Image (cartoon, rainbow, N blue to C red; front, side):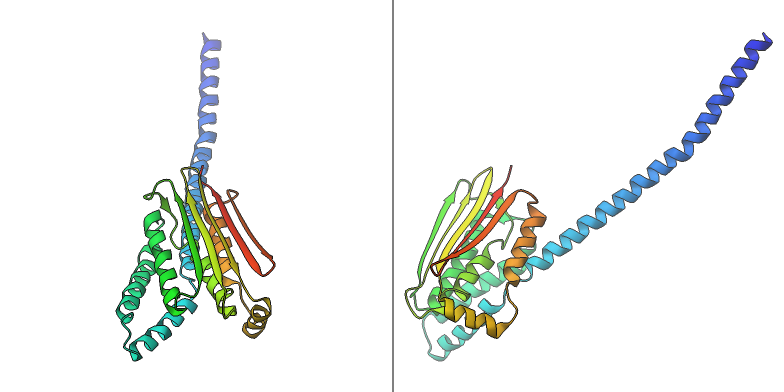
Length: 242
């Protein structure tokens, strides 16, 4: 009996000793888990803040040009003045309010791109050959706002604005349940573009912002290519949504 009592006592001591070792380990694991949660939350907040900053870096070049054009229309008392004011206000509202959202409908994004095109056509007196092809499976599908505007803006800034005539922009937006793509081609004057870049010194902010947004939103699930051939830019963004 004494031997059995001693054995039970020894087993109890082992159990108590094991529990005493496990308690600090459990607390340590709990604390590490809480720390990791805090780190993950801070990381997510940092990514969200960076995405918001990147979205806010829409080049003001377009708005300055539109305001200058609006001034000229107002001086001439053009019938287009009200239309330009309305479209510009729609774009600014979308940029300020919808641009903060994580996603918008494809329809809203297309309306934004169309307003951008129409305002530029007014500025260039409809001299630009523009074709916007839309292959949309679901017009209420949600996509990130302002994702492709920099590419379209660059087509005007570095393409149309470098030429006096025969400028064109052809682009296509395609969406499905599994993929999102944007393809754009535009011509440009290489000599004028090189001279403009030399005067500005630093450029490419819009493209770098887009690259970073794609990396944050679709890591390892996107392709972004830019090629120039015979004074024609070819830009393509492919996104895997699966």
